[in-house]
Image (cartoon, rainbow, N blue to C red):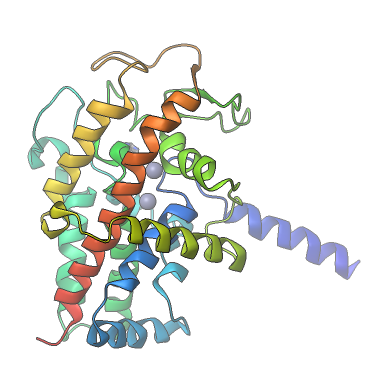
Length: 296
Ligand code: ADE
Ligand code: ZN
Ligand code: ZN
C-alpha cells in the first residue's frame, strides 16, 4: 500500500514537472548552453558561480538551466520573460510594441543582469537572477523565441509532422517544439525525457555535445562579442525569417489547418542554425557572467 502510494505520488510529482510545450529550448539545449558557458568562465567567475549555487547545494550551471520551466505555476508573471514576440513581418525590435511593461526576454535579461552584478543584493536574490539568466540568455538565441507570425505564439500553433512524428493528442508536435527540441534530438540520436531537470545520463549527453560544438567553433564567432540582448533577439528573428518559416508558413499568414510535413531536408537546414545559436548562447552567457561576477 505504501509502495503504491509512493508510486502514485512519484508519478504526480513527475507530471507536475512536465514542461509546457514551447516554453524554452528543451532540457538538452539548455544544458548544452550552460556547459559551453562554463568552459568559458574565468576562475574568479567560476568561484562566484559556485558560491551562489552552493546556496542550494548545487555546483554546475546545467543543474539550474531549466529551472525557470519548473516554476511556471508558482511564478506566472515570469512566463513572458522566456521570449520576445517581434512580428515576422517587422524588421526591428520596438520595445513599446514587443515588450509592453518590460515583460519580455530582452528586458528581463537586463534586469537580472543588474541584480546579479549588485553585490549589495541578498545572495538568494542574486542566485535566482543567475538561474533566470542561464535560462533566458539561452532562450533568446532560439529563432522562435524572437518571433511571432500572425498570432502563432512563436510557432506554437503551427502543427508539424516531423520524421513521421505528430506528437500526442494532448501535445501535437509544433514548429516551436521542432526548434526547441526535435532538431537537437535528431542530431544527437536521443529522445528527451519529459522532465525539466536533466538526469545524469541527459547531463552527460549534453556535456559531450557541448564539447563537440565548442570545438567546432574554436576559431571563434565574431558575433559572440555582441552584448545587447535586443540584437540577439533580432538575430533570432532574422533566422526565423530566413530559415524557420520559408516553405512552412508565409509571413503574415495564419497557421495551416493541417500539419506541415517536414523531415530530412528541414533537419539539414535547421541543425547548422541550432548549433551556431547554442554556441552563441554559451559564449554570450559566459561573457555576461564574467562581466557581472568577475573581479571588478
Ligand atoms: N508564447 C508566445 N510567444 C512565444 C514565443 N515566441 N516563444 C515561446 N512561447 C511563446
Ligand atoms: Zn524558457
Ligand atoms: Zn521554446
